[in-house]
Structure formats: C-alpha cells, structure tokens
Length: 471
Image (cartoon, rainbow, N blue to C red; front, side):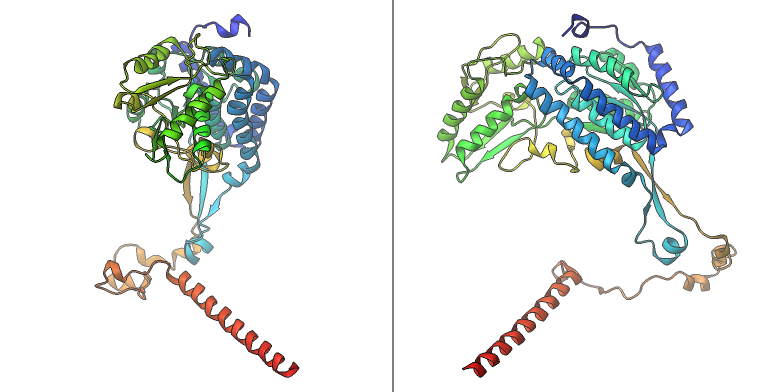
C-alpha cells in the first residue's frame, strides 16, 4: 500500500462543504436522480468500483485494521456486492406506485388511490471505522436506489480506507449527485450545522446524541445505527463445544470491534467450567501462535483503554498465546467480570445457535432500539429509509355533483351520505376474555377440518364395503 494512501490528507474545507451541498441540491431539483436508469447506472458503477479495486480495498483494510485479505473480502466486500445485486433486481418494483388495496370503490377504483415512493432529497451518510467500506457504502447504495443525492463522510479513524474511498468515489460515481467529504470532529460538527433532508449515522451512542441534537434543529429525520450489549446465553442443553467455538470466532473477527459481537456470556452453572475450558481451547486455536490473521485495535487510544480494563478487572483473566503488539490484543477470556468491563466493551446481536449471522439475512431489517439507535436498513428497508411515501388520489371532476352535500351550507340530513358500517361483529360490554384471536381464519381451518374428516369417513366406509364384497 502506497504511503500516499496511508498518510493523512487535508480535510474537506467548509467552503467545499457548502459548494458540494449547493451542487447536490441543484441536481436533485432537476429530477435527474429520480430516473430509474440513473439509479441502475450508479449501482452498477458502484459494483465496478468494488470489483476493479478489490486488492486496493484489502490493502487499505490491512493498513487500518490489520485485517487478513480473506476477512476483508468476506466482511466488507461480500456484503456490499450482495446488496448491490438485490437493489438492482428490485429497484423498479420498490420505486413503483403501490395501490391502496383497502381504499374501496370510491377512493380505490374511481380515485385511483396509490402510494408514491419519492426520494427524500439530499442526504448525509456518516460511516464507521470498524467496517469502513461496508458501513459507509451500504447506506449509500440504499440512498442511490431511493433516488437521493448523497454527501458521504467516512470515518477519519480509518485513514487508508477514507483516502481510498475519496479517490474511488470521485472516479466512479456521478459527482453531480454524490460527493465524498472528509473531516474530524470539528469539521463534522460544521457539516451537521447544515440542513440535509436525511442523516444516516453509524457509530457510537455518545456521538449519535450530538448527531441527533444537530438534526433536531432542522427537524431532519435520522437513522442511527449504534452499538449495544451483545450477550450470548449458553444453556445446559447446548452443544457447549460448538457454542464456545462460535463465540470465540465472533470475538476473533475484526478483533471483536463489531456492534454485533458477543460481548459477554451467561452460562448455566452446570456447564460453566466446561464452557470456559472450551472457550480457552478455541481462542488458542484461532490465534494459532500467529498474529497475521488477527486484526489490530484501530488506534492506540482504544488499545490503551481496553488494556486498562483488563488490568483493573477483578475477574480471572486468560490470554491466548497469540503474539501481541502493533495495537494487537491477544484473545482474552475474563470470568466473573465487573460491571465496568461489561459497560465498556459494547456490542450487540441476536442469533440462535450461532453468532453474527442475522446481519446477512437478505431483505431482513437491521437496526437497533434505544441506546442502540433507531431506524432500519438492508434491502427494501434501506430503500424506505431514504423514501417519502406520498398518498396520491385522483377524484374525477364529474363526481362533484354526487358529493355536493359536503359543501356549506351544511345539513345534518346529509349525514346519511356518509356510509359507516353498523354491523360491527362485536357488542357493548365485552371483556378481554371475550376476545377471539384468529377470527374467521380459525373458522376456515375448522371448517376445512370437518370437510377433511367427513371425506376420510366416507372413503373409509367405501373401503369397508369393498372389503365386504371381496370376502
């Protein structure tokens, strides 16, 4: 990797922020990005940007995080390429007007009630340092598919990845609609003072509060993808060895710097000692006495913070035999942990019998709640995050005579023109215990059951009749 890519560059100036933002608002006003052809073109350009530069991307991730090429390609690039293909395959379907099936004859049939999917406008995407390509560009894919113009801000902590993205985005993507900017906390604060139509932020809960506060001043909607506690639960009936293996893998991946990583483990006392022993075993196996496959902590400040937690914990500490150094921490197991360790190694995730895998479910929503953020993305959910749903209704002009009763002067006798269903199917005075869950569906299945039972009975009698004759 060249020194030019790994060395810090001057950040984007405030004048450039203003220039880029102004250009993007002008572009959006032309309607250029609403064109489905433009969206498909840019998604394909993103694809070729990734394919043409796989080696450079892997080298940037190695420089920033010490990531092995296999881990770089599977964790950052694979997810992006999968997402691009899904968005390309569904962009026309997602962007199409959606009929309102419950609108009825007047509003639906005559009024052609429908929901139109409109892009929110010029949006800001702020990425994270731990998966700098995946977590920065995945929201951009969704924004492009929705038809938005995008200001992209990668994390300044992943210097090589930031610099490479800066070079590639300007070379492959439409500069009239997509601009990449750089900056530290001071520059990002100035950027957030500007009004955008949407902000998508991935990062820590602490920084997200500043983002949310800045967005609130403009009533700008946000999606906040944050960290969270990620416990694993190992029951007495679990395959303890497999559980230990997969949990050790989760912590080894990206040196545990993942919001989905297993942060702490609750183990049934019956299998506690066995689990700890197998966890020790698998951490040794994965470290293998070499550091070449192990990622490093992103910077010295975070390395010292984590080292300090381990030095000050009152729990029992076990370190695997892998080499440390260069901001690398050997895989470490702490038993009987303190609250401080739990609170300061923040992660999150929900997967049964495995770890991390739910992140990659195609088309499923991904997002947090509370201190883990709000909003969703991936697949159509990402498209909808950058989309305004506008209700469209076309009332024919000839219907005005039929609806003249709505105009002043009002007359109560015209209330009969407002048809409201009176056969409610429920009565006054019902209690919670009176409620039926399943409704007509349950009756349908019950009816089918009776029919099937009757048919079986008839068939059985016929078979008995035949047997009687043959005997």
